[in-house]
Length: 530
Image 1 (spheres, rainbow, N blue to C red):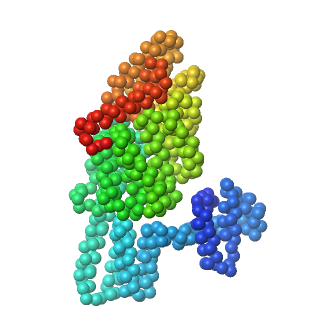
Image 2 (cartoon, rainbow, N blue to C red):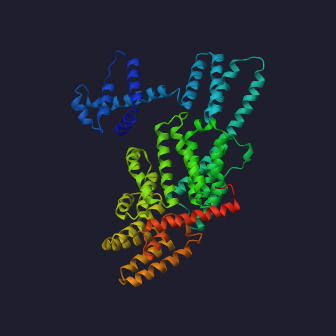
Image 3 (cartoon, one colour):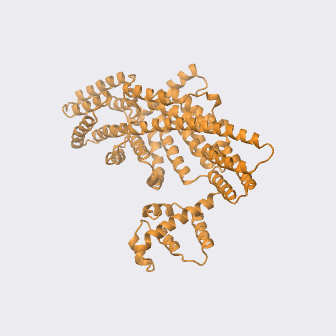
């Protein structure tokens, strides 16, 4: 712990609530009432800083020896974690569970075997209630040690039951690991590249998935096994863009929690992830009524007093709720009203930005930019697109990075930035050449924009807009190209230029038509889908 980095300590201190800070000071007084409180003065000094500045602390606190500051930070970090564990032991069920297990070990080492068994029974009940298979296995391992030391009538039956139960738990863990490992792989592929690009990708992923999915009888699986298995299938079907099957397993995920409501609290992060997965696929399929119903269920978590909302849970809710609030405006073509949530979003985004992963940040920036493009505010859209474009050394979501360049071209064309359009065309071609891949959709747009600057005639430009629309309509039903239309509604943009109408108005009309088409289709085939 002696090598605790200053930024880790700074972030931990500034993540504390007022109650946690108060408890920490009470805790330090109790454990060392008459001792040296240098580390507490270090805590106060760091708490007051907006950025960590060790030299300023040493100038103010003359009793601090520079050579000892590293050990002081490590001690402070350790004491903070201990106080947080103590404070949250009764609130966090996993902490309470490990506390019982620690107590059982202490009693075992004291040769208080019967008392140890009683404590293990408490821990076991809590582990079963929480579906905590890994900790349950630890409890069973300790129980194996203590049983021979508590010889009583019926001991053989208990031994046999313990062996059978351990085997079942071990098998459940093995299956759960297989599913969760596969789900993790599917997510890694998606974060790296976005949706699958070509048949070779799909075939490779299908082979990988089928080779690694464990054999299973769905009806015999535990809650935990089903949770991981459904997540693996959701990740697989999302990546290959089979949203109909993705919907089946995303719906199963959420229904798993509906059928086991106590698990919503025990596994709140997984419940939020399940709702998020269902919302993603409902958005892709344009099931607007069910989408809005599930979104209400997600936002309701923040108001539910039964849930303990840690900073991690608040971060997960922030990401999911705001992304899908933006998606709802996309689905309905309501861009101006969608931009009104950005002010509130930007404040919270700045708060959560240090905690967000790069993937989530890219998604936010891209969706916000698309909102402003949709209502014709291209200058503001460029600001958000440049946040993505200017990020260096990003090796994920190649699809988002590629379409950011396409949208920048569209925005600069709309703004009349001829010089920037020409330079961006060249840099974009270089980018795609370096990547060694460019879709027909992307090539059509690049060639179209380049043509606009070689043909000044307004009549010919209008004819090129019509020609590009014809090409794009052909691609819309191409299995290998239709995914591109999820990133930018090129048809609505072209219609707005061809018919000289506001982009938002055209986009809203097209969005309403698409929703109506989906509703009519599902009313005929799947009456309960909406």
